[in-house]
Length: 357
Image (cartoon, rainbow, N blue to C red; front, side, top):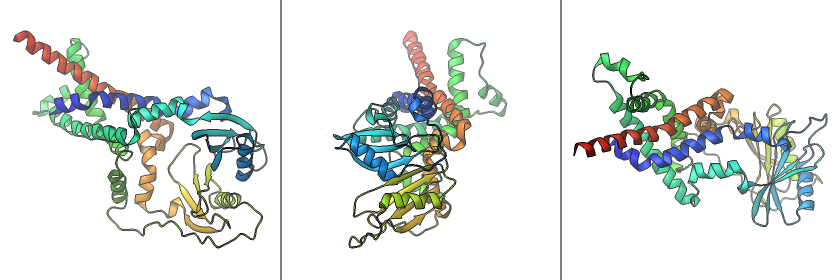
C-alpha cells in the first residue's frame, strides 16, 4: 500500500514541499531585495487611512480602495486596490502619504509560488481538491511508513534510527528514506494537518472543535446594520474605527481597516507582529457613524477560534519566530526528499526483478 500511495501522490508532495521551502522566508527575502518595504520612523502619528485612500484615488481614479493596512512604524502602509480588475498593493509612506511602489499582486514571485503550493497553478476549486487529496494520501503514508519502519525485534532499533553512511549508495538511499521519514513524521504530520485547512472547510471546523475540546461557545454573529442612522460627525468612519482599534490594542504592530459598503460593518484587525496572522483582535463599526458595534479581542476569543487563527503560523513555523521558520524549512526539504528517495527504492527493486526474470 505504501508504495502505491507514494507513486500516486509523490510528484504533488514534492512540488508542495519545495514551494513550501521557498515560501518559508518570503518576508525576509522581500525585505532584503525590496527597499520600499522599509521607511524612516518619524515622531508623528500615521496619516489617516481616508487620506491614503484619497491619495490612491488621485493617482488611480478608477481604483477601489476599501482596505488600508499599517504594518508598523518602520514599514510602509499598504492600500489594497482594484484597478481595471487587477489587484495591486499600493505602498505609501505612513507619515507623508507619498506613494513608494505600485505592485501587481498576481505578478509577485512569491504569490506565484504560493499559488503553485496551494493550487498547483490549477483553477482554485480544482487545485484545492488535488492538493487536499494528495495531502490526505501523504498522511496515510506517514502512518504506513511508521508501520513498515517499526522493528520486529528490540535489538533492531539501533539499525532503524541510523544511516549506514559507509554502505553502497542504494543502501544509503534506503536508510535515508526510512530514518529521516521516522524522525520527521510527527512534525510533518502537524504541517500536513494544518495544510488541510486550506483545502477543506471540515478540517477548519475540526480545529475549532479540537481547540474547544468539544465544548460549545456562543457563535460570533456579524452585527446588523441600521442603514437609517446618519453621522453627527465630520470625521470619516474608517478613521474613527482605526483610531479606536489603536486604543484597544496599543501594543499591537499591524492594523488593518476594511470598508465593506453601507450594509456591512467596517472591520478592523490588529496583530502583535507585522507579518503574523495569529493573536488577532477584531472590532466591528457602523459604516456611517463609526460607532463600535462589537468587540472580538484575542484574549476574549474561545480557544477553538484562537487555534484556527493560529493555523497559518503553525503551518509555516512563523508562530515560533525565526527558529520556527528554520524548522519548517528543514522539514519541508526533508519531506521533499521522501518521494525522490522512495521512487529510487521502487525503481531499483523493479530493475532487480527484471534482471532476475
